[in-house]
Image 1 (spheres, helix red, strand yellow):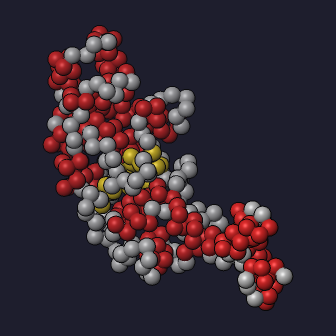
Image 2 (image 1 turned 135 degrees about the vertical axis):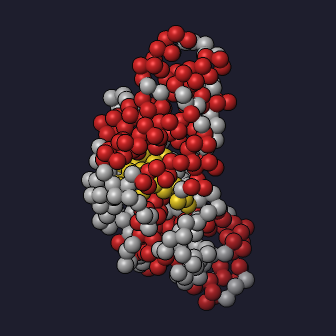
Length: 354
């Protein structure tokens, strides 16, 4: 009878009643007109039924969660645009998975180390995100192809005074890559990936081949010299041989010597800070001039130490916590250093085979 009232074949109505055919919005509205049934409730019941039925039939693809991790956590789009995945042009490229395997040096995508079940091939000191690991792998690729003199601790120690003499002028920083290579340190610059927040890294290809990588994510003279000397100290102390020293957000408290800073980082921070501005001289200057530091004071202090005022400014910012001050001294340095270094980023792709 109801089928006749609704104006539909009895077979169609029977299929709806037995769950073989879905309730349409039109039918829901007709039932409200005839029986006063809420159409929203009917349609909601229909949706719940279809979802429950689909869940019974659903079979999880074995590689679905794996692919979600790989393509959800890695910055694939950035890696493609940076030219890190050879011959891959977009996310739909059929060569993407094989390119990822080559990038991470694996036979199968299942073995890429960001997956929970995959072995951690890169022993990083502390936790590292997939984005940070991708950056680190790129640094490693570049470093493997670099020639360098035979490394010795004494050779690296002997060039520290030479590096110190370069602090007087931004232009002098162009000599840094050559000096480090001649002391046996492989030095590369790789532009950071979005959200990676990496400043530098120290690791060893083997017992006699240290590597220093930097991102130059802060294009400032003070940050460049602090991070560089920080990584040099890691090399001198043999840090990075047992676990990669990946320096993330090397600023403010993390660039200090407080109790929250790990021992390896604390000693590297101390060496970097003292290299930029000797601790006793900085404390004396602050005691004499605080709380007002005039341009004349900063320039005079810099001239006394024979370093650029921007390095004084950076240390004053850190010590006083006033990062809004002295910014006019923080000159850019990336365009000076990169022409003489082996780099990847800022529109340039390093010529390495992957």
